[in-house]
Length: 148
Image (cartoon, rainbow, N blue to C red; front, side, top):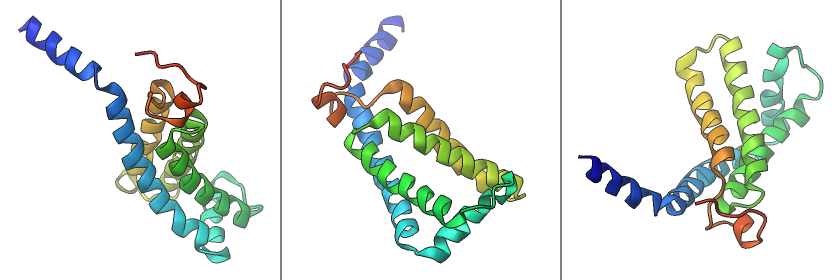
């Protein structure tokens, strides 16, 4: 049994970069898909997003904060997809998702509504530590070295 588990571990370790690439493609595309309507939605959409910060006592510049949330989702997803400024993109996506989670919980929407933001946020938190892998622009530009 020990050797079987070691063989599985070696098999999977040899494919870490491919797994990270798949993660980047799927999650990056989904965040671009979610972020695009927020960017193109106009002032009404941006105001609605920005007004959710009122639960923190932040009621200034709702249009700016709403627009920036959409920008982070769309361009963060794009950078995630490309593996370009990957850790910065993951950090901003983490903060955006934790803000979404907190505002949903403080607005009494419940964990059923807020859980996706929490899950996404901690996926980005883990992605910061894991890195973009060798199939990324950061790696191709020699901004990172592959540790595997």
